[in-house]
Length: 280
Ligand code: PAF
Image 1 (spheres, rainbow, N blue to C red):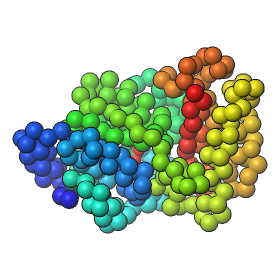
Image 2 (spheres, protein in one colour):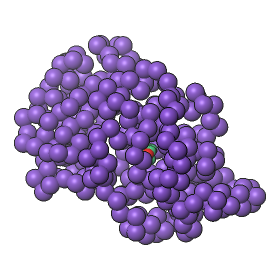
Image 3 (tube, rainbow, N blue to C red):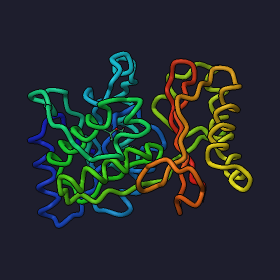
Image 4 (cartoon, helix red, strand yellow):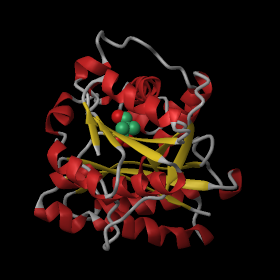
């Protein structure tokens, strides 16, 4: 596996791949890699000739400085994992390489970025769009793979792609879970022993709530899921919304959307976890 810290080296690699007629896939990450990230890389390698992974903890998407400070950084282990699954190249730049100057761009993609995470983490999605658009410019891949755990992020990035007329195809991949149902996340590394023990209840309750659709309105499902999770030690729901999969706007009746989707954020102690579930 080739490892690049600088744009020039990476772009020479990309140029050689292009000259060989290869289709190039890209998996952007913030590191602290787990089986969820590796599933993206494996799929990217199955569907393309080459896969480039970036590891970059992007400061502009953290609205909370403490979150940025404590975000796990495990580059050596990440590099070993990526190499073990046959990743073609790792791009691990410094902040000054991605942002030689402060990025003042504002992406107006409308309502998809304003609800849920957009409301609770102001500026977060603008930071995600800054870094992903910058990485797309540097890497110039044919396609990029993202995990559906960050359900809203995928909708926002599709809207960004449309806005900036990016030719990069955005491919969404299913959530990977632990055997007990907890969605894999780099933040799981930050959970205490007690938190890790209780956190799988988030998915257990979400999964159960699919059957409540028959005799509950969306609002009743929201209230029951929230109450059941909040009744558990360590867990506190920040928001739970049931939205239309495409518009991400909340629904009031099941008939409002052909594809209703539940999106949740829960604090498990100090750690903010997200998850989501289809109701179709
Ligand atoms: O999903 C993530 O890990 C990040 O938001 C991303 C897409 C790598 C941008 O920093």
